[in-house]
Amino acid sequence: MAFLNGLFTLLSVIFFICLIVALIKPSIFKIKTRLKAFLIFFTAMIVCSVGISFTLSDEQKAKIAEEQRVAEQKAQVERETKEKAEAQEEKLEREQRQADAKKDQLVEQKLNAEKQAEIQEKELVKLKKLMNTVHLTTASNIPSAKIIPIALALSERKSDVEKSEMHTGQILDVYLKTQDAVWSDANILFMAASNAEKVLKELRKQNVKDLTNVRFHAKTTLVDQYNNKSESKIFTLNYNYSEVLKLNMENTSLYQDYLKFAQFESNGRVGRDVFNAWCSDNSNRKFSGSFCSQ
Image (cartoon, rainbow, N blue to C red):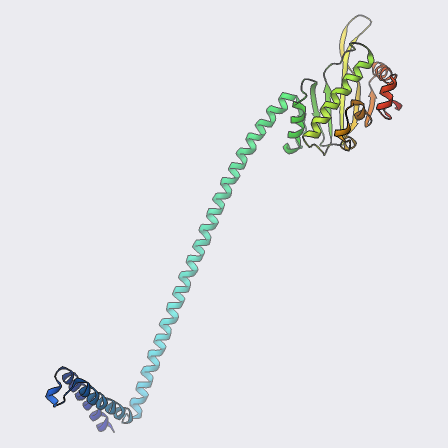
């Protein structure tokens, strides 16, 4: 079998050489066309190949099978190695993209935070300036968002207001400028209530809603028995602001309408005299609800 295998191998080589020669010059083999020469020698090569395969020994077949198996294993290892390398490279690229994206996000967050801090600083400076203009003082724990609309409202009536205080987030104390009895004691309450009405309207225009009470403190010039003059607080108008918010502004034209939701708090005899003088007027009692019944 080994002899036949070698013979078929030799013939296969010879026919291959003849095929090359015949394709160049078929007339050497007395063949007319190259196609005919190709078919003859190629067929002979196929026959020899079949003969070679049939005449292989068991050892040769086992060797060829082993070589094929080794080659396939090598190819498989190379494919797996290549796939792992590609997967690792893709993973590294993905992690790098994620790291770059996170870095960009952190940079953007930092820039936004710095920008926001700058805006807040400018707003705080602006708010402090506004508060100084209207002489408004507040507790440190009250947020700026709550102070701004109140300060804006007070700035519209700063000609009537001496100072304001907000020590809690729900009560606003407004100290009105000195109200002197130009014509009568009743005129002091009239002027204080009129100015209070204007401030309350401004608060509503600024959409201030989270106050429970707005207290207006009125003072006047008093003269003692020695003709010494002094400015003293004589009463407070304490408005229930949650009730004031319910008042229909379109149908409200009188300052007395706001007094329906106010408590009069006297600070001595002068304050009580002012209250009695104002309430002695029938029209005042009529339009101010239960205010004069206190």
